[in-house]
Length: 165
Image 1 (cartoon, rainbow, N blue to C red):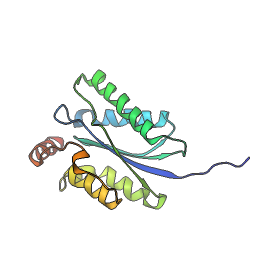
Image 2 (image 1 turned 30 degrees about the vertical axis):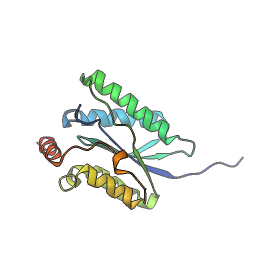
Image 3 (image 1 turned 90 degrees about the vertical axis):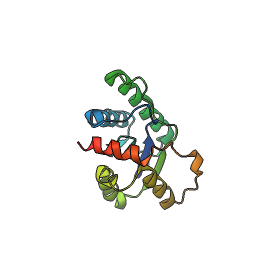
Image 4 (image 1 turned 180 degrees about the vertical axis):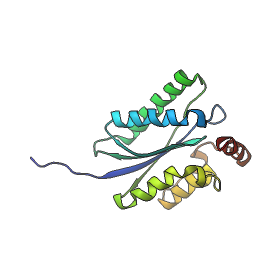
């Protein structure tokens, strides 16, 4: 019997529901480790992960039969429950929707570097600028009204200053 071989790399991006809560540096490592466990338990391989105050980047390798929407649903549901229970943030939730972008193996090192350097990246660009650029780079048609709810530049600047202290 012939085996199935695949190499599928997906960059996931999703956002915190705004004005209810932010991912703080005090527990971002815990959240990243928890999500790593979810990804592993669902049969995917984690390549890189980074929690920012208002959004999350995850780069994974998946099998062809993996449902991306199911995996994201499980990551969001389980991680929000974990945050509520462990850190007592009852108002925490993720915004609806997500981005899923495919890359080749030859691009994987650059994607990993990009995700792991998010703190530096966001000293110069907002999440909104980042996400709409990704959509444009991938040729994704989108309606601005149907994207994430964004925070203002002043709010983000304040968050990033606290994040880097």
